[in-house]
Length: 116
Length: 109
Image 1 (cartoon, rainbow over the protein chains, first blue to last red):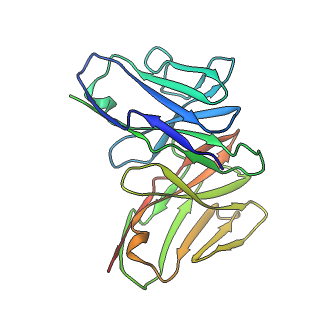
Image 2 (cartoon, helix red, strand yellow; image 1 turned 90 degrees about the vertical axis):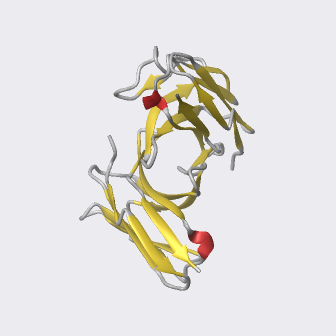
């Protein structure tokens, strides 16, 4: 298994500003994933972050809006840039099973972002 | 885009009753997983069923998979108030999880 922590757990931000969310894992993992969950909705994958390479973004998400860093095998950050109220969501990071034996993913507790 | 649909979107039952949630997906899969989310928090993995399996059990959970119909169901037996949560199915493609819309389950004591 993997234990994941996220900072901050929640924040209220003004439009036009940026917020960086941190994700820390207790095991070394190859891929880390960032998801967005808009109010009352399901999870949508933003991007996949591999250590040592640029993140791979899903359709509808761009690096300028959601820059991602992956400096090592246990840490990643997601920045939500130039925020608008539409960015109000829960942002979650996840990792695959570090043992590589299963396909299950482990999720952080999420960062609840409100943009005013 | 989301992989599939789940129904019902919301389900309210009494403690002790069984809860059944259904999930449909669109593309071929290697496996299908079910996750639980409490009150907008992180997701917890419940169970995984492989494409060559038809049924799987884990405690009070029973999952079925029908690849010909591209559908799966999650049954929670003898529900408890603590089972109140949102439940999501997810399929795996290219190492990525693609989630369904989810079912919000409310179990009343």
